[in-house]
Length: 146
Image (cartoon, rainbow, N blue to C red; front, side, top):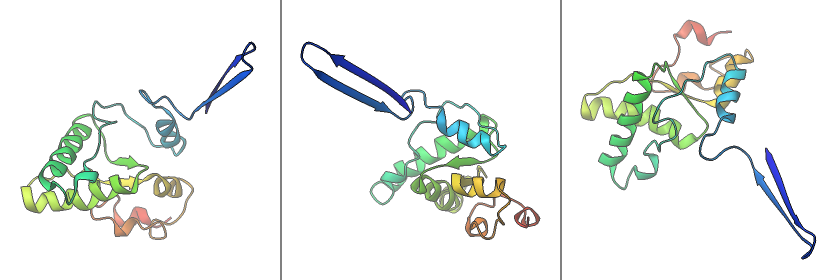
């Protein structure tokens, strides 16, 4: 967390500005991922919207955004996507599966919620973490048993 204070002695005003991470170039989530032993990679669409807010309103545009992001992640060398947002998880898991049947595309870029990744790194059983409930298979079944 970044904290900056501004004090004006003449006016007696004190302003405190709290900032959790750099909004333009965030790094904290990457650092959290790397504490698990996973490698976080840089890729051009990393900070772009996954398309989930459009699902149910404009499904085609929602899938377009998801497909762009999946394709870019795969091209950049990602083996899976780690997300902190449950809506992104649904988009990259369920909607990716839907896109395979509707559009015939299959990027096979599974996603995992950060708490699941952290749990796996801590040795918690994958079944306990709900890994088997994912539509896009993240790990081979033998890797789910710690």
